[in-house]
Image 1 (spheres, one colour):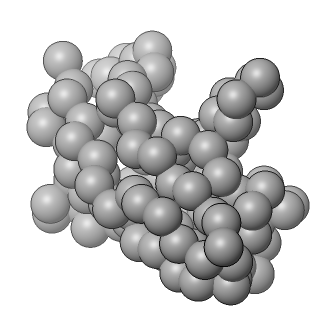
Image 2: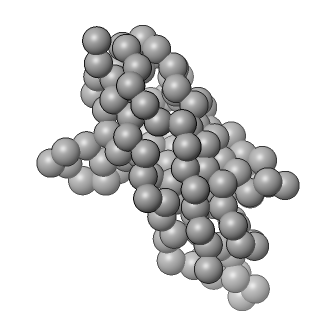
Length: 119
C-alpha cells in the first residue's frame, strides 16, 4: 500500500507562485506526479516524474511549472510560477509502484489540495 500526503495549496494572485509537496509512504515508488481537476472538467495530468528523473508536462504548464523529486524521502514537488486563473483546480498527487516482475501498480491518489488563482 502507498499513502500520499499533500501540502502547499492555497490562494494566490495571477502571476504568483506556489509550491506543492507530496510525501509517499511505501517502497518501490516508480513514478510520481500531479493531476488536477477543475469543476465540471475531467482530471488531467499536470506533470510526472519517474524514479530516474524522466519528466513529462502538459503543454499548458511547460515553462511555468517544474516537477522534482527526492527519492530518499519519497517526496515529489511541483513548483508553480506565473500562475493563471485557469490553473485553478484541486491538485492530486499520484504514485505508482514498480513490482518485481517489472509491472506497474494501479494508481495511488492523495486526497487533493485546492489551488485557487484569483485577484
